[in-house]
Amino acid sequence: MKAVVKRISLTRRAVCVSDIHGHVDLLDRLLGTAGYTDRDTLLILGDIYLKGPRPEETLRRVMELSRAPGVHVLRGNCDDIMDWMTPEEAAWVEGLPHVIDAGDFVFVHGGLPSEDLDGLDAWACMKNDNFLAKCPAFSRWLVVGHYPTFNYCYQIPCHNPILSAEKRVASIDGGCQIKRHGQLNALIIEDGAFSFEVADGLPRIRMTEARAGRGGTLNIVWDHRTVEMVSRGGEFSTVRHMETGTEVEIPTAYIFREQNGRLSGCGFGTDYFLPVAAGETVSVADEFSDRYLAKKNGVAGWVMK
Image (cartoon, rainbow, N blue to C red):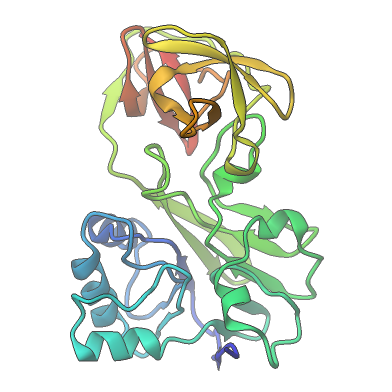
């Protein structure tokens, strides 16, 4: 199927959000944090409702937002027609474009197989894994979602937007719903400059004592997640990351197994411990007997209790 390209003029501040994945509460919170008003341009880059906790409400909220003239929505690879949709909702999803051409900026969910926007394949625009790592440099800024920025961070886990000045690509998927420590990002474009705001649903705690940071040599990401067991424990086990040979202690519950009992990978693994000052607040994604899986300023890691 040929990609549908929508052309607009970007004359106002632009707020760009991608990969909401059914988190309507985080969407509304994020728009509030970003100070979004109807004087802005809002661009929603796809993967609106599937995988998350409130798909129907999220779709209907985005449809409501899209009635304003400054709101533009793209279709992502997870925006399938579902049996719970009304005919009007299904038609709305089916009619979403795949690319927005805004002059100095181009917006797409997954990536562009070519900078020439004529005759693009729709699926290649919606699903283009590991795009930032493999794409060429573009002549104008390309804003994409789809592939969590966490997966480009091979040493220290981070969910914030990545701005590659070399390739002129902004990758903004914060891993909302995909990772327990993920977040929903809003990239803000104003007068040619970039900034961002984030929202997540994680509880927060205030640390009573300082904790030193350490590690930061390995973050196990989706495309390089294969591990082998070194020593099995109860709450934590030590595994060897096959790509680098690095040994790391991770929660036993995070380890995947294939049907024959062999290990196939893990959902999260890092040797990075967040530096935290006494009285500082961090978000908590998971809790163990001696530590938290925490996040601070978009960066995830361990914090000892």
